[in-house]
Image (cartoon, rainbow, N blue to C red; front, side, top):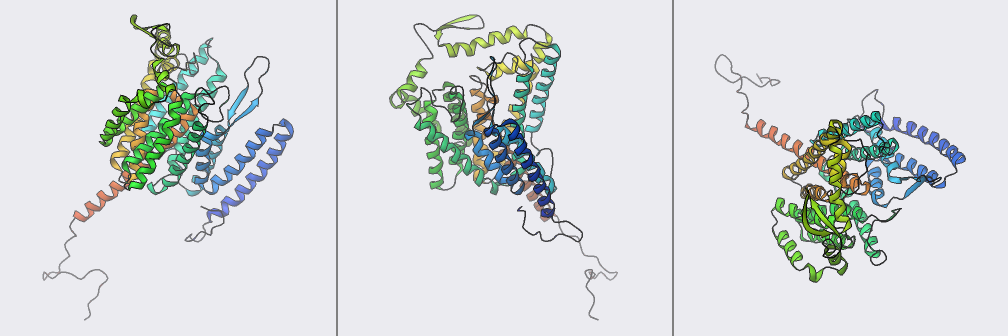
Length: 506
């Protein structure tokens, strides 16, 4: 709702919403401006001052129009830089934050304030995912408190705090977007911007081919993270394929298939084998669920001719996994498989030895692990969950994934809008893909993967809730139509009585 639009239909004695918003927002901006000048005079950090100034504008725009804040967040997810809060000194690491970390909090507060003014503030929208989030995050908090109590030597409370804060930001995105987008007609704009950002990132990746050994996302400090870009592109390609399969018009189908092609090129040059397998699984799941079996035929054809059509770098990267000379012997469950693999693959298998050793240390480690950020593992999400939160945490994490799959499947089956069906279908495939991707990296803790992921999952929840409302209204309408009207009352002579309010002419 715009600030200066006159509200119509308000009752006597009621105050127009804008009359409350304008003075509160003006007072906030005045106080914030004074604080902004004061902090700049004290800290003198130009980057931080600019970030805070932009945040003020974003907050104001979000309170005026929630869509504005969500659009800014979509852009910032992949295209925001990092802000250095504290330079490295005396051997300590520098303290950096991504600008979208700040934006998430700012936009979330703006959305909550807007919803409060509209009188529809609730903690979250109903969905099976809510119980999964609460269960897993509660276990993470409990395991971390246990680690704090035990003062484990390999556990750092500052690192644990920032990891927990990062997880909370993912869930804030989910709750915020699910609150803000309620109808299928509101999906067009965010989906359009989602793919515009994907095209920008893809063009950057294509441009950087040949200039770097492995393609990565823009604005990354401390070296490239090709697995991160691979996981993000897997989500985008799954959603694009889902929309292409559900679109009604040929030109729209072609547009989404072109998006799949545009994102597939930089994905190849990430040389991320986990992303290759994840995409294969995601596309296969989408084809099976939608019963579009020609997709399976295309996948089989591409795999059969991969040595002829794939870039040399991709072929060499895949072949590098198995090494006849050199490499490391692959041992699983104490058995030598007689296969030598590269160091990266070996580390992803070797980490499970550490998991087995840690879980054998005692009941506390077995059930609740060593707390979030303890023994920070980067090679496997599931190994990390077990080390941090034990078996109880793994059960809660698997339960969360199951609830996400359940919700996306229901949204796909229950909705009738083609775009809504395409998004739900794509996110079901993307979730299956990330489940596989997580065997090779910590996919569900990587910011550039999880922010767009939970944004799209929130849209899927809105799709499911709208479908439930529509089906309930139709059920009530059918029930009302099937109920016969009451028989008219009769007089003592057996003549139907006149309707109420109708008088006799005589």
